[in-house]
Length: 441
Image (cartoon, rainbow, N blue to C red):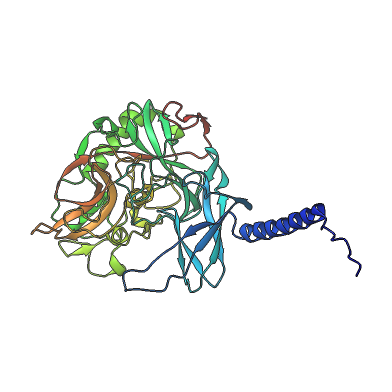
């Protein structure tokens, strides 16, 4: 029998085959991984209602300006959440205060959610081009840089007033300083008509939240009396819910400030925009608003429901000078006070009054917070406040830590005048504490 020589297999050929198999496995592994690349794992367990099935991983991917990125953009970085897409029928509810997503309708494992973020929009204003947030904040939460605030929102936001789009400053902003009439002011908002609404802030530039009596023009009562609904009015007439026959104590003090400080700068000050001292009532009830009839004004409800509104429902409550084409034309000088609605927009949280301020969250680093009590222009109503047995007229004020309350009886509180600057002025500077806006014609 002839024996054939045993043939050894070619080692080089075997190596090529092994290498090819490994490459195929690597490519398959990379394909599987990249289908979940840039996603972060997040497991949620419902332990409140007992044991539930672990639905597996939820994966998030982030697109910023339509480009895939590895990390979600930081809050206040100029980006806002715009939309989301999830597999398996899941949906995303975005919590802007916590800057985080909440996945709902989660029924299957390995759900993937893609979150999209876009830059704030840019708008052209009297202050130049501004970056503006379009989303609506949660006004139940206070906004500032301090850890006591529930939201760390900071910037310029958009909403509507009677004249159109208005851009308001919220939180611990540092770009709304104005040097005018040798005094410092802080911009509250750019009104819908393009004028600039700003509030008095002292003879020197103060940091946000700095406690200083220099940030107000002394103190005053709102009215010397409080035993009639009429005394919630910036102006009032006995027996009329919306009267303008008499000037309040605080209006007289405001007028004095105008004549002594602002009169020589009147060419910069707008005379058409008004100041709303809203005396509308809950559900427009009849038979209230006079005498000692228990009355809740519209501002009270808006604070309780954390629902600010920049329109003025009654012409008689929009205080304007005689040359204005709107409002009651009852003012002698174009100066007023901030509204409670503007305080809510600025970062003070609303909520229910319980007599202990448990629901009124502080905003100690807000640009409006001065470490002092100061008045708003918004009536709360005539009623028995929590903790008091007597009836009284109540007007909203801001506490030293930035929270709101209905100020009862003739308390003495800070006066912070508010004016509107013409929309056709020339603006210089960047609006910071060290480089405040200045005005020229």
